[in-house]
Image (cartoon, rainbow, N blue to C red):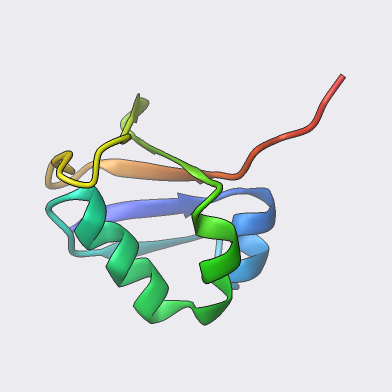
Length: 78
């Protein structure tokens, strides 16, 4: 199991700030999150996924068991 933490618009779309999910790759994680939260569909494609601080860019990228994955939408700032 991994811990998924949602931030900003991703938390709003998911309706939770964190949860436990079983996934071994980025692709499995995205599929599991979309299956749980319909409203994430429009947000997740723009989010960065970081497993223990390391960006998951490739769908085949492994997600280590016990990792914390942050779901970070793009931020505007100044």
